[in-house]
Length: 326
Image 1 (cartoon, rainbow, N blue to C red):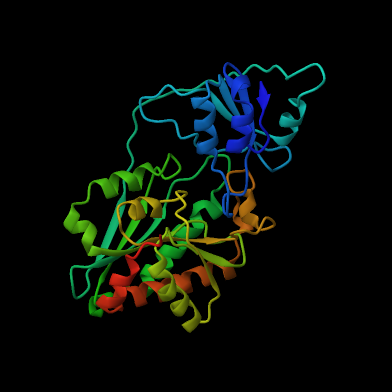
Image 2: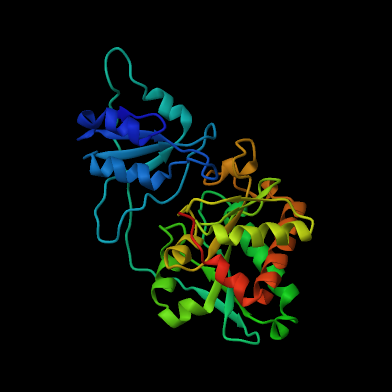
């Protein structure tokens, strides 16, 4: 096998002649940070270099790390699994050379079906703001941060604004996506199924994913620089601190809206904070004790404010949201 450390493109390139036929070992990293390299990208680099298998070491002592590898539909891929940091340490290179390991994975593949859940509240026009969250998680934990927090906040917001939407300029569509943890498949199929007219009617996607587990909230604005003044103004007017991070990050369902040209952002907690509880996402420690009521309330209040403002924003403001930064 071969240990490529963090698993950067530079590390893969430096060892390109040693990867073929070996198991590649890399490290899981904080997903909510500038410059993070997603595990699926590392897996794909290993696959393209001819690796025989893929291991990713998690951050939590004594615990595995989970998450999809991003294997494409119909593609055999290569065996992949998450391991504990102690296991990775035992596979370190020595003077005798690279370590040897045998991967044994037992799986069962079968047809399955899941659903996207939609709930529409019409406004005064046929335009809508989509409020989304994903309902799937991982069976090694409670998925409390990722993404029970987003689902809970979305439900609280919808219950609060429901009596008012009929008087707003735009309606609200609540979308609960499944198969997000499988390469954003649920939202990808939903967006692909929209007509051009339907896409045009969606003025904004507010995606709630891991909105607790850190004290500060960040909006990942997907390259839509024109959206940021609106978000910051709305947040400040309602007493909330908000950071905007512009580069498109394909780490949740907002990405599929953004790639279709629909202004979209992900609200996330703990961005760029390596000590925040969100560092434990995808480990057995993603439990309800990592989520505080205060964090949920803050996320719901900010979301409600942005949703209401977005549904009532003048057409000129909505037009400005679609401006992508070069």
